[in-house]
Image (tube, rainbow, N blue to C red; front, side, top):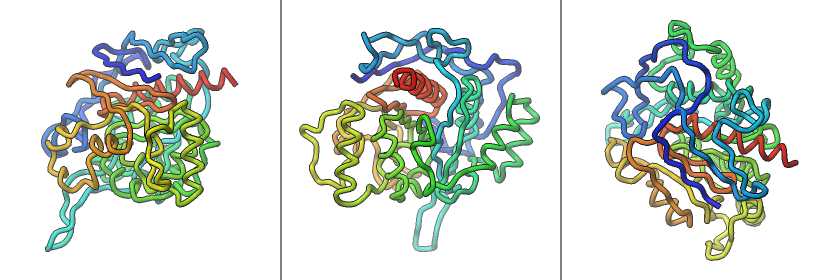
Length: 345
């Protein structure tokens, strides 16, 4: 059963103790322009809502409020465990012209997304583990180094900022990442996902491993390019594809039987970046494909939320949102689903 939630309010997390900080835009954010145009305000208090998500796998269809599960003091059923955050190693999204490569947009993850993930994981007692193709710390949009990020967070007195920087410095290499080591997988919004994550068979293998084990997978905005990464080849892909369908309760009827070209979440319902939104940005013509059209042709059913509202879609163990404004909400939902799965084991 797929659930789509549109949000207009905000939900509780870490108490706000400071004013919002101003950080530059990543240039890849939904409904936002290039990095050089305007700063983005990172909210000191994360979003709140009373919205409820229902999962078909919950006995009796018991509702659980997002981030406010029964018997919890911090918004989670259980605490502990590691979250795999898969990010690109690319700092720029460039194009090749007759005169060589030209800069188009920032490809790194935004500080807004990092803080959204950090606050959600910290308040629930989970640890973020960052994973990149190179094993080097992921580039942060509009910052030349982690030291610049650290100094800004120190100046703004962001709680737990030293731990966040430490986790970024201890980034793991993608080819060694294993789904068994994590409770869930998050693919944040950033343009770099359209470069090295999309072009890596290791990305495809890791995502399919999470799907086959029935572990929650969250995708935000352009993180969707990672979902379309090069698959395994031949019979191995065919077997994993069926395991993903079975683990999530999705039907194989009516889907392509072309083996290695199968989309691991074909048949599911999901949210992604609207085509009209992609067309607003200078990199539009240089993307490998357009997510909304690609997912539709691969058999996914697409949902949308009214402009300016928080929202996400939950189908089985796939949690998706169109823009990075919903990053924290997506991660909190992943942690809730993961905790529920652990309690049922």
